[in-house]
Image 1 (cartoon, rainbow, N blue to C red):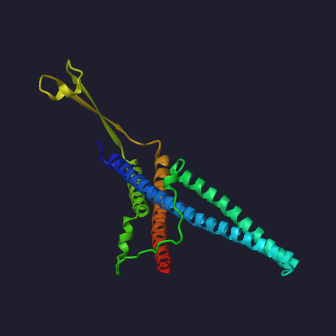
Image 2: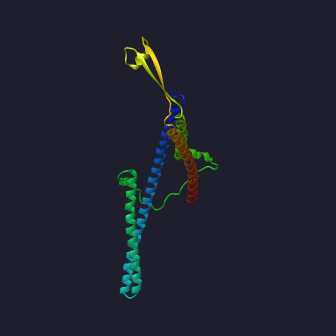
Length: 256
């Protein structure tokens, strides 16, 4: 018998903890999708910069050959040739840096998806990124943020903490267990409710928490502290949600 709601509180705590974990899983999926998208476009951008660096390197080499030819016929001086050689080496360094960066980007993308990326799935050569289309209606209510999985997880954690307080408080009350013995020839529990003869006797046994009062008191204090921590976490999660939405809208406005 759950006379003081201890088992009911523990059940509610377990349910809310499960729901919080489920929300965390959904949040992780969203974060993973965002990271993959970010890594994909970072790779695309670095590939474009690599192509530009290669073109610049080739053009600087052609210019150096032309400058050297002018030096041979007396049109240019050695200073101009040296300056052009510096530009060639700078372009060579840029090409090497972007080549390494593209390799790093591919490794990062492979790490996110858990395996090598098929060449067919790699971003194609791009010349410009598409513009961001913002079709957000005016006057969106702020309570839409309650749909965010991180806020949902924080809410369930808060509910679980409150249920845990109920379980800790109920520990101060006696726990009553009933043991049943049945004088019947059948050992199958289901058959005990199927008609037939049987003599039942119920013997209640009461266990009062006399010697663990200090432990119960400490557990109740711990549950309250954990509840307060969960409240603070919930408040911080809401503040973070508003900040992330605000920052996202500011960035999106700048991309128009």
